[in-house]
Length: 117
Image (cartoon, rainbow, N blue to C red):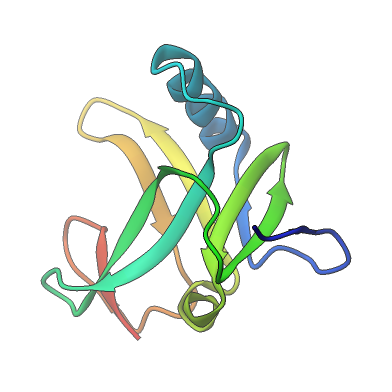
């Protein structure tokens, strides 16, 4: 199991809105404290990559960070695509959900969940 990395700054940021939404999801779905928030990328989507976001248990090749009180799990190889990304929660008339502000994305699709780098 991976250790929590405290000496390095986490490659991503969570806004206050995202933290509140994640805490609410954890409570509503009764997610065990052993689970962390897995953030990553996978091939697919209309622009080449899509984001992965969900609670999971730590795996052998994970780096583990503490971000605003949330344990964040990330495969080291995903860092190049996610470095400097900010995750926010939007609550509006036309859009409700997590949004990804990724400075590494050279192009994004209209839905905002797919990007190219």
